[in-house]
Structures are given as C-alpha cells and as structure tokens.
Image (tube, helix red, strand yellow):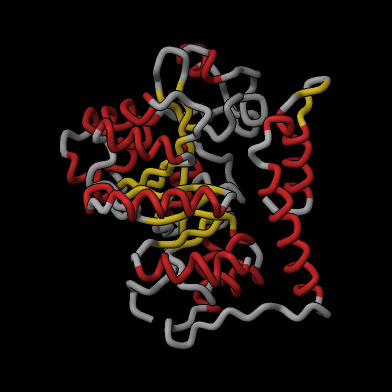
Length: 323
C-alpha cells in the first residue's frame, strides 16, 4: 500500500482508552502516539464560549454537575477532572492554539447537534482569532455535522466553504440525506468530504451494496467509529475506508498494519455463523437495525423518574461494548 492508501488513525476524544478524554494530557499523548488526526467534541456555554466536552453535562468527567448550555464559562472553567484534578476543561481556542504547535496532526470537530447552530460561526471566528489565515485552517480542520439542516446553515453562512466536512451519524439514512444533498448541490466549494458512521453500519447489506458504490464513484471518504477490537479492524481493512476512529491509537496502528491489504485484494468476508465472531457479527447487525429504527422517535427520549429509554439503551450498548 502507498502512504495515501494507509488507513488514517483518528484518536477518539484524543486517547480515550488510557487518558481522561478530551483533555490536554490526552491530546499530547495522542500526538506522541502518531495519530493522524484527533476527534474531539464541541459544546457551547450560555455566554457563547465554545468548550471541549463530549457530554452536554459535566457530571461524568468533572467534579461538579452542570449543564454546559445553561452555565457560564466562569462556572465551567472552575471544574476539575475527577480522574486528574490538575486537568481542566479545554476551550476551542485552547485546542486551536495547541494545533499550531503540533502541525502534523489534524482535528476532526464533532459539533453536537444539541447546540445552537451559531456554534459554527463561533468556531469559524475562533480559527481566525488564533490565526488569521483561513486557507491554513482548511488544511487542518474537518467539521463533523449530525443533521442536514446544519449542512444548509454552513452553506448559508459560508463557514463551510472549501473546508472538509463530514456527516457523523449512527443512521445510514441520515448519511444518505447528506450525500444526496451534496450531489444535488453540485458545488465543489461545499462538496461532502466524507461520512463517519458506526462500524456495524458498514457490515449491513445497505451500506455495502447500495451506499458503497455511490461513495466510491463520488469520491466521498469513509470513517468508522469506534473501532477497538481486532476482528473489527480486520473487517474495516476489508473495506475502502479513509480512517478509523479509535480509543487507542497505538493499538489501532498495529492492527491496521497487520490487516492492511491493497484495493485490488480487498474483499469483505462475513464471519461464519457457527463461530463466535459470526454470532457477534449477526447479533450486532440486529442490534444496530433496532437502534436505528427507534433512534429519532420522541418517546424514546421521554424521561420517567429522570431516566429515558434512550439513556438506558445507551448504557446497555456500552455494557456490551457496542459503543
């Protein structure tokens, strides 16, 4: 394989497997691990400061429970990491400045759809504040969007122009909406760069038989998340993907090197049903299809005694290492 064919290693929340996610320590360790890219998450405070955190609230990672969108940056900046009290929540400005000192690594910005869309403008402005050179940022940043109306907003405001941007989704239907919109638009300045989908989505007949030919023909790149197990790397390497988003960049590099193949030799092989891998493969596809079928239903998010079915389902999927 040429260097261009090598699968890119994208550190999930920087280096989630070994270090507190989305912290400066994790960023530095992901860089030391020679990640090609760091995937990180953006939220916005009530006073408009863009910060780096996966959850919309702070209780899982930080020493006080706050809802970020309802809290000021002053409140957020006082938080300390439960696992390592020397660490604080980073701002977008922090990681953009960090990236200037680490020029060999790109950033994939997962912009949560629970935010107000103005976060796109705030992010764009932050780039220019750190370095007033938009062409530079176009080589460093990949925007990650979840819903089609954010794509439309990015075009209306111009913030996505000539940037690489991807759709991040559990649902292949939503990914297809982005693809269709990009093709209908037919504008090279706003062409969809790629899709980032759950690795199990890539096992489905719909992905392999219907989406994949379109993606290859239109030169739309494929990223898979969150890939951590050996068998999942093997299956990923049998597809023409651009990159894997992984909790452990070091282990991911080893496994991608172990399973890499040329495009000419690439053949997706379904594990036999009478094996542990085969049972897992087919069970995970059933789980994936079920989750996608109820994902957007409002009743799934209705809370009873503070718990929603969506959250309970999320906990279950984490327990079985589906997420």
